[in-house]
Length: 377
Image 1 (cartoon, rainbow, N blue to C red):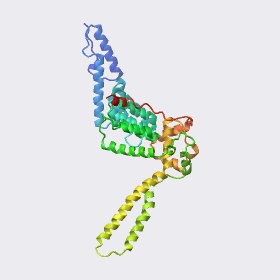
Image 2 (image 1 turned 135 degrees about the horizontal axis):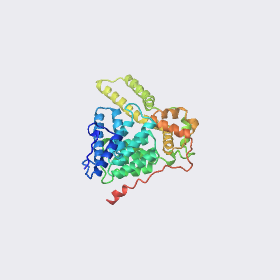
Image 3 (image 1 turned 180 degrees about the vertical axis):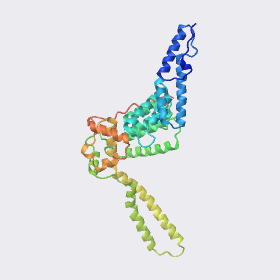
Image 4 (image 1 turned 90 degrees about the vertical axis):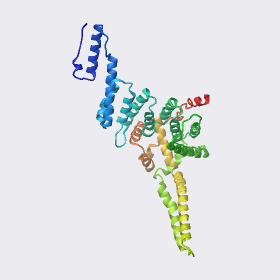
C-alpha cells in the first residue's frame, strides 16, 4: 500500500495551505485503502481548538491585535464558534471613549451570532440590548430582542425589567403595568438588589403616569398633541437644573431661618436652642429637596417631551420633530447627553428627512408568549 507524508508534519503551517494539505492527505489514504488515523474533520477541530487556546492566551496578555487575528481565523474555520463571536463582539468596542455607529453595529452583529449558537450567553444578550436602546435607539427592535431572551430563559427577571423601561420610554404605561405584574409571577427568579431598586423606580413612574390624564402623556406621533405647545414655549431655554432649583428655593428660606433664630434671646442652656435650630434647618433642607425635585420635574416636562420625540424618531427611522427647532437651546442641550453612536444615527435619520406617517403607532410585539407558560404551570 502506498504511503504519503508531507513537510507539514515537520514544518507547521496553517490557514488555507493547511486545509489543502489535509485534503490531499485524505485522498491519498483513501486511494491506498487505508483508514486515515486523523480524518480531515478531526484535524480541523483540533486546529480550531488550538487557535482558541491561543486566543485565550492573547486575552490574558491583553493583546487585542492578536485576539482579533485569532478570532477571525476561528470564525473562518468554524462559523458556529459562539465564544469566538463573543470575543469578537467585545473587540469591536474601543477600550477608551465612546464607540461610534460603525463599531456598535459590528458589535451588535457579533452579539447576534454569539447568541444564535449559544442562547445561554447572558452577557451577549445584555450587551446587545444596551446597544439597541442606548446606542442605536431602536426601541421596538429592543422589545423583540428581550422577548427572545425571555423565551430562552422564562424565569429571568432582567428581560422583563428592560421591556418595562422601554415601554415607559415610548409612553406605553398601561402595557408597562402589565409587564410589571409578571415580575411577581410564581416561578420567577429572585431579583438582585439593583434590579429591585430599578423596579421600584419604574413602578413609581408607571403609577404617576396612571394618575395623570391621558392627554398629558405626550405622544409625538400626534401632531396636534398639547405636548408640542410645551416644547414650543421652552424651545429657546435650557432644561432646568435640580441643584440650582434647590438653591433658589431652599437657600433663602434657610438663610432667613438662621438670621431669625439668632435674633431670639434664649435663657438657660444653649444646647436646646442650638439643637432646635439645627433640626429646623435640616427639616427645611429635606423639604426643599423634595419640592425642588417636584418643581424641576414640572419645569422639565418639555425636555422629557423632546427626549420622547427623538426616541420615536430613532425607533421608527422617521422624523417628527420640527427642523427649525433643532438648532435651539433645548434640543441641543439634551442632544449632548446622548451617546456618539446615537447622535450619528439620529443625524442620518434627520438627513433622510422621511416624515412620520400620520397613523403611525409604536409597533409593540406580542410579549405574552412566555406568560402562557406561567398560566399553564
